[in-house]
Image 1 (cartoon, one colour):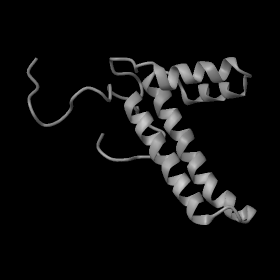
Image 2: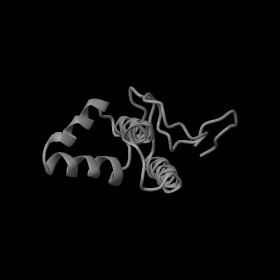
Image 3: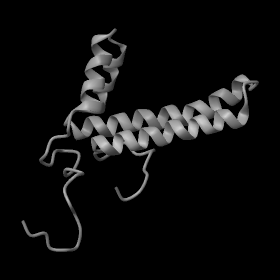
Length: 118
């Protein structure tokens, strides 16, 4: 993982990267809400929650790309029970496709300027 990229929809994100990035977003959101306390205005709620929601949606889209699905498949969340279960299965539990796809190479393959001998 080169860097933490939360607001990016193109490319692929491995299963471990998805979990790590998701935990970072939730951790930062928890820290912000702890610092603000429970008596916050509704405008402040939107200011804090919208970037976190955008980051989580973009992480899910990149994870779907790793599974070789379009980000539009995220709309399955509106299907009661079955849609959410399918998304959890695809996003959190299954490995990405091992070969490159239309969204880029496998994020688990070593890349660099050095020679890889197998």
